Image 1 (cartoon, rainbow over the protein chains, first blue to last red):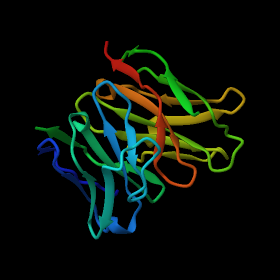
Image 2 (image 1 turned 180 degrees about the horizontal axis):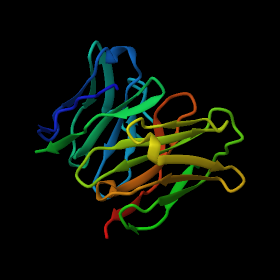
Image 3 (image 1 turned 120 degrees about the vertical axis):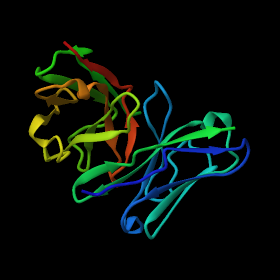
Image 4 (image 1 turned 135 degrees about the vertical axis):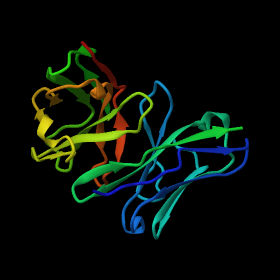
Length: 106
Length: 120
């Protein structure tokens, strides 16, 4: 089965750029989606199909995907961006989530 | 506006069967491309996709849980029901239902989640 690998945690200084990687075999050939998950809240889709933002998601959020790594980029990180972030793909009729990355904004 | 809401028991005993209902509004299974999924998150762990059902009744299951899960839809009630058999304490989690974007395989709208504890 397909696997997605994310670092357990990352930190970013307030106002700086956070880049959250998601590794998978030839992930560049797949559509990658990203979710923000805060404690006690439902996940929120922040990027879908590489670099599309749902309505209401700030332009600070963007995505890229090539080779074996997809990346969620958050520019001008704010305290409200502190959360767990999950990548997700569809592979061979199954939906797969990464293990999640806890983003800390310092 | 699409909304989904999960309902079901908060406490289930080991070996019992869990039945969760997702009641939605703002879309209909009469539309081609519509799909609803169940996803869970155990405490302190990652999101895990469980099952999905399409507008035409086609079902998809997480291969690791395939023999324990059943997903059905009741289009007349705008509901999707998930049953999971032979519960174990490791199945303790928050269970979410979510709407799949019609033209993609991402989940754009999620329910608030239903917390289920498995304990004797």
